[in-house]
Image 1 (cartoon, rainbow, N blue to C red):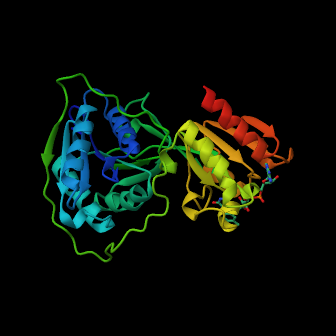
Image 2: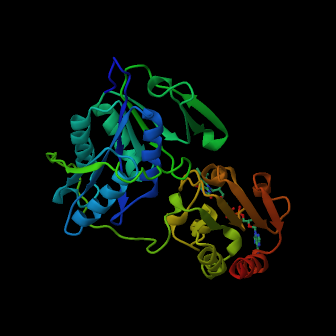
Length: 339
Ligand code: FAD
């Protein structure tokens, strides 16, 4: 908790790992936590996992967090945490909360973070602000900090702050806040094992079926090449995949393309799909329905390729190319390859 005499804040970051590696949003959450507590405050982190290959991965993740400003990284390593079970993961974070007594708890606004944050907030009887895209500490941290989050599918933004004294739980949207920079050599934090007691589970994960293996995570991709019904077939995604490979990006899709069976629903971006905020979003053969814009309109730069000059997507695009995607996309690929 914050020290009432000194006002010193303590934050705890849930540092999410995926496929044995720290997710970039975990470093963004760490950056937000460091900003919120300020120079005099302290930031702890917790990494959670289990199973045969988890120990080394958790230690690597913990070392990275310690090198980027986490004073203590708590490692909860237990076989019961091998698969994502919300009750168990929330209990592991709860063990860290009990050890650290933070006034601020920061998670990534990922599928797991969205599941865990309300549980954590309820457990600490705290407030919860979800999907934060900006943090303003000009007037101070703690209850003075102002959090910005999008509303109405990105059509408006609201600014919120917490009541004084209430524990704060926030989730930060991937790709919006700067990652925590490394601290000076010699001032890295420490890593400590943390015990927790496994709660009874209402559900268990029996198997995980991977739908989009080998692809860059859409939520964290810097560049997304996205296809709509205009790609016309599953094969029509090939030029988009080639462009994405050349620019180091991920492939996404509209629901139109998913519904037509051209690609898997795991690629769907929009109101009922994933929300993304890459640095560059290239929409190919996507009309720009409001439900699609809901998931991508906050992208830093939007390029639209569509043969219909009246397509609504041009209304949100920074750069518009009126033309046939099957001509334009290979030309772009060629140009990027030549760079
Ligand atoms: P279309 O609207 O058919 O557009 C295809 C575009 O491709 C056209 O603009 C056309 O001019 C262009 N085109 C065709 N051929 C070419 C070519 N060769 N070169 C260049 N351009 C070409 N949609 C989502 O995307 N995500 C969501 O999460 C989502 N959630 C929804 C939730 C609800 C409750 C509802 C009702 C709808 C939702 N939708 C969602 C669907 C949405 O309303 C649209 O139907 C969908 O986004 C349309 O997909 P599209 O742009 O690919 O297809």
